[in-house]
Length: 188
Image 1 (spheres, helix red, strand yellow):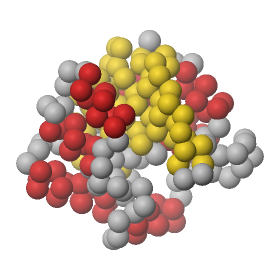
Image 2 (cartoon, rainbow, N blue to C red):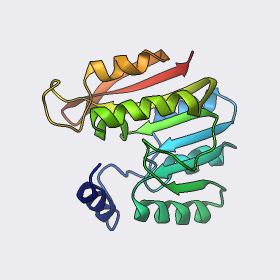
Image 3 (cartoon, rainbow, N blue to C red):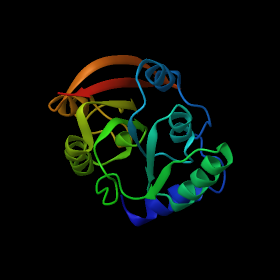
Image 4 (cartoon, helix red, strand yellow):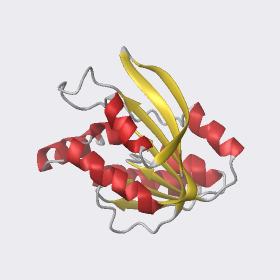
């Protein structure tokens, strides 16, 4: 992602970005209820809402975002909630400071904002970050077709993920009028 885009995303956090609802989605809460705590990584964690939800249920959680302001806000929210969590300013295609393996990796809207080459680096990271039989929860919205501008994914982007991960469940829906999906993958 270029410097201008990074700067613009960071500016969003001087207000409340439209994607920062402050509420963990039911798909994540259902997953937490059905799986014992372990180690989790939230890619594109924003202000840490889901990191905090996981930590409150006994998970050891690391949140990563490239927006320094979002990470500062996340640290404050976690401290106020009385939970221990690790927050890092980093690029999800590099992840120099994370310590795998993770039993759960969560992404609510990061993957679909990446370029094709960045998505490939991200996919490669999943291979070494996920523990054997680790879970990957992904929320994405779609773009109309391969040549439509990003953000958004096309089915081929998800098929490339399925080359290395087993698709456990998919729930299609809408984000506004735009098609979206929740996907639950597991490492083979």
